[in-house]
Length: 93
Image (cartoon, rainbow, N blue to C red; front, side, top):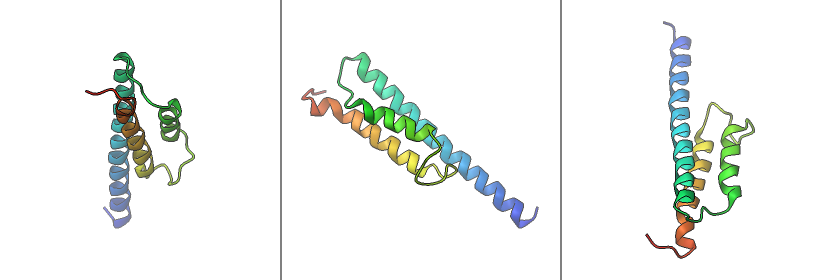
């Protein structure tokens, strides 16, 4: 293998790994929202959830799509917002 092939292979593997992390966070976000809704707890503003989903799915990003670090950040912020919504509503665990 020459250097170029090795580099392309490494970049592809890293891109797939980062996408897998982003997809995992997306699944956690959807499950968290679904669990909160089933329990009758507030989920916070709808735009936070749907904005994060749209940012992950749509191709317009701050960084090009092989680099999913910005998507992961947006999804983590939305997940954090969903998890704090019951606390802000005054509902204790």
